[in-house]
Image (cartoon, rainbow, N blue to C red):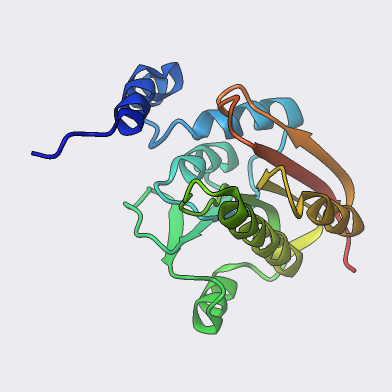
Length: 208
C-alpha cells in the first residue's frame, strides 16, 4: 500500500480537524464553502425570497443548497457544472461546460425572460502548485464567470465571484467596475488565511 506524502497527510489532518468541515457535516451541508457564502450574504443581504439565482461551478452543491433555502418557494436556483452533482430538491441542474454553445443554449433556456437576480461563482481550477500556471487558469475562470453574468443578469443584478489575487486581478476588477455600479471585496472567515482567494461582489449591474 502506497504511503501518503507528508503534504497529503498534513492536508487530511487539517481538513478533518477544520471546525468549518465539522460544522458542515453536522448541519447537512455538502461542503465547508457554504460558510463563505453565508457570511457574505449575512453582511451584504445578497439573497432574498423570490430571486432567480444562477450558481456556476456548483458541485458538490453547498452554495446551491444555501441559495435554495434563501430564495424560498417563489424563487429559483439554476446550477451548472462540468462535474456531476447529486440532486438537490428545488435546484435545476445542468451538467456541462457553459463555454460550449449547446450547453450555453440549454442554460439560457432555463433562465426566465426577465433575467437572473444573482450570479454565484465559486469556480476554481485544479491547482498544480505552480503560480505561473495556476494564476492564469484561475483568472480565466473568473473572466468567464464575469462574462456570463453580463449575459444573464437583469439590470440592477449582482454577481459574487471567487477571484485570486495576482496577475490579471486588477484588470478583472476594472472590467467589473465598468459593468457594475458598485464593486467590493470579501475574505470570509471560512476562507483559509493562506489562500489567495478573494470574493468579488459586484452589484447594480448596468447594461454596457
